[in-house]
Structures are given as structure tokens and as C-alpha cells.
Length: 636
Image 1 (cartoon, helix red, strand yellow):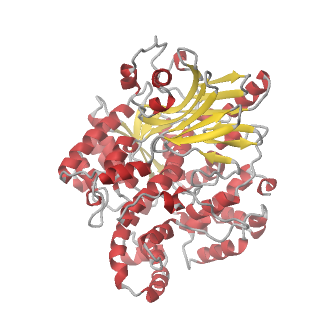
Image 2 (cartoon, one colour):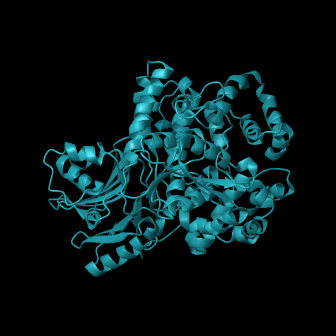
Image 3 (cartoon, rainbow, N blue to C red):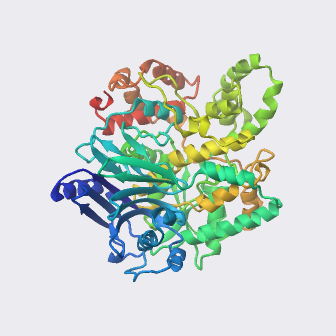
């Protein structure tokens, strides 16, 4: 795991070197072990790198790295997990200097060409490779979007980097806020790709190769893999066997996905929450390990949010070396000021806080962790899928005219009040049902469930992005499968994976996601929905695999998520901080937001009449980000 950055602009060697070094230094947290740069003065190309040494810790792994013939110069953020198989398949392998995956990657480029080589790669990666023969710069992102890559123009200068903070170091960077992207953020709580919060700067889409020609300043993008194509292929060739047969095939894929992600020359562990996904990854790691696997979990003093007893029980059953941290309110409060610079653009998934805290704890013991991310999206774990199945069947029986009234009645009690009355955590689910009662169709229900603000950005309207562009959607008859597709193309890469990447890399920890092996994603789309979501439960086939390692008694519990008691804290410990950012003058300062609807929701939340925690957290994260990294002039 590392940081890549660079730019193209006609300059002297000294200028190119000085600026790219400054850009790389902004990514030192992603790569504290080494740094490097490579300059092509004739083309005006500067390539920078920061290294977190994981495979081949020697100087032979230094980057930027030249291929054996000298044609390619490359930097790699992430890992190519099948590099040993690729090395064995090379037709005329060079004399290797070391044993890094980067060196094998370059040999693959020389043997097969850039695109053909990338199509063979199984990994998480963001790659920058300069072809000295064709005078082209290629930027490449992995299939599922695990690793980030930003790019764009600042005037005539082409910039790229793992994080926006590197691009901001270039003297030509303008930093003008994109009001359309801001509208998208306030709707979804993250900025969906390919947009970024800045005008002229984009996120490279997952599974895409970008080619930049410094001579003409032209950019071409070409997808080499997409979720949409996986959906089309998978649903046209459905798995015909039984659920038991599917679980056996899935287990074989999972075994290999875990195995290749356990390759490292540094200490390795796993995040264990006690849920289905992380427990399965832990079980398969332990099966393949000769010694107890290191497992890490964060607990919470509020029992309603504390998953640590479940994780501890799983760890004991599997025989792992378990480490647990109990978060306090002070721990959380101390992280909040770090969030704007950690995420670089507004980001409002509040589980970013415990994710960072568990990463920080794990980094004291290991350099690499595996996680269970991806299981919900690929195998149907979110409550909205179960709610959706039931609602699609039941809504037809309710006259459309009375649905809004029923929704208002359900929302008359806060989620917390529903929890107390029903003596279980059902309030959030009841409020979700209430929100979708007025939707016209199944897709509208989904977008109602995942949307928040729609009316607070001054002179801002949300542009079309893949998740809202129906012309790019595959033909899926089942509304639940459409919801899963929507989540895989946007929420997964732009929220979940961005969250884990920034939270872990802030402490120089590499996170790997076995459930997002592209072979698993392709296999999951061949499975009928009934093997994933049925009878009010998701991840059926994953559960079937896990039952071979962990008894049902340790798994039979409601899904808790990875949250914090944000609603209560905004009325208590965080109230003064929130009030300072939600003051009308503060809301008007950048000329971006209409304070009136925001203040109305803040008042309702403080009174306890409503729970607007997610809406308010989005505005608070935006305000904190503006305060930290943006100037009033950037909004002009």
C-alpha cells in the first residue's frame, strides 16, 4: 500500500522534481518507508511515490521502477495478489532483481502490453505507468475500486494522485468547489465517482484505464471490466446447482481469495466484528495459518452499539490471538478534528470514526489487515434488501392516497422511542419503511432510502452520475438485484472502500478485502437471488459456508452495523461543536448553503421531535471540511 502522484507540465528538471516531491510528501502517511521520483524533462512528466513496504522489503522494491528494457516506468499503490502465477506464466522472463509484485507487473507489461496484462491482474491497485516508447501516461484502477485515483487539469497542467491533498500541493491547483458535486454529496453522504468536490478533478472509475498524451493534452478512458458486464454475464448464465453445491464452489473461491491476500513480508491480522463477513474471513485465515491469527475489534461503552462480545466469542471459538479496544466518547471526539484532512473531500459516513480507531489499534501490532468488506453488497446483507422484498409485495395492497399519512404516523416517534417501546433496535428500520411509503416504484424506494438533502445548495443541481443514469443500468427484473447493482457501482467504492482506505492509510496500515476478489463478484451474480436474500435474511450462501467453522449459536443475532450514538451525542457531547458549525453566519460564510432548512432540522433534532442525525452529520462534515481545507474564494 503506497501513495502515487505526478503531473505533466513543461518545466525545468529542478521545478518538476521540487513540485512532485512536495506532492509525494503530502502522501507520506500512505508510504512512510521510502520515497522516490522520476522525471522526463522532454515530455514534462514528473512521477512521485511514497512506499509502505509489504512485499520485498529490500531496495529492490523501490519505486518508481523501470522495466527490464527501460520502456516502462511505473508506480503501484496496492497489491497484485497473483503476481507469482503471473511470473510463472511470463513467456520470456527477465532476470529479476527482487521478488516484488511491481517488478512482475512491469515484466507483464513488456510481455503482453498494458491492457492485456491488466486483464490478467487479480488485486487492488492504482497504477501510474509512463510508456517511454509511445510517450503515453496510463492510469489504471482495480476492478472493484478498492484503491483510489484522482486526476484532472489545473489550467494546462495534468495532475493525478492517490488523494486530493497531493494535487493541492501543485501551484496551479485552483480548488474551486463543484456545486453539482456538493449537491451529490449532500444527497448521498459521499461524492459519487467520477465526480470529486473540485471542478476539473475526477475520480478514475473502477476497472478503467486512462491514457494521457502530453503532446496533445488528450485523455482517453477505456473500461477493461465493470460490474455491469459482470451482471449481464452472470444473470445470463445462472448457477444451476443446489445451494449446497453453490456453497462448496463459493468456499473454494473464498479459500483462494484469502490465501493470496495472506502473502506479505510483514505482520498480518484481520478486523473481526463478529458479523458474518469478518467471521468468515477470520475462519478461513485461521484454517490456513500455522499459528493463531491476530484479530482486532473495537467495543463501545454503549451496549446498543457494542459488537465486541460477539467478536470475542468468535475469536475464542476459532482460537485467534484477539485484541480489543473499548472506545470512549473522548476517543471519538479526538478523531473528529482529523476527519476533514483524512478524507480530503466531504465524507459523512459516521462509521469512519470507529473504522479509524480499530485501524489505529491494529497498526500497533501489524502492517496488513484483512477485512470482511463487500459481503453485504455482493451477497445481500443490507436491511434495505429485506425491507424492499416485503414492501414490494405489500405496498400494492395499500391505497396510494393513504401511504403518506401512514409514513407520518410511523415517523411521529423517533427511532430511539420505537426501540424503547419494542425493546429491540427496530426504530431505524421503521423509519426507513416510513420514508419509502410515498415512492412510486421500486427504484424510487431505493433512492429514497439512500438520499438525504435535496434543497440546500445555492445554485447547485446534482449532475448525472452512473448511479442515477438509468441508461447505463443493466436489465434486471428483480428490484432487489437492482438495489444490489446500485450499491456495487457507487456506495461500495465511493463510501465503504473510500472509508476503509483513508481510515487505514492515515495510520500506514494496508487493508485487504478478500470478499471483493473479482472472481467472487462474478460468481455472486450467477447465483439466484434466493441463495442470497430470502425469508428476511441475507447472505444465505455465505452463512452456509460459515456454519462449517462457527456454530449458529454464535451468529444468530441482529445486524448492528458499525456506528456510534450520534443522535444523542449531537444533543449532548457534540452540541457546542455542532452549534458553532451550524450557526447561520457559519452556514452562509462560503455562499454555498441555504441556512433555513438546516437550522429547522437542527432545532427539531435538539428538541427530540425528530432524529436528523444523518442529515446533520453531512452538513457538519462539509462545514468542518470547508473550515479545514477550503477558503471562501474557492466557492466562487
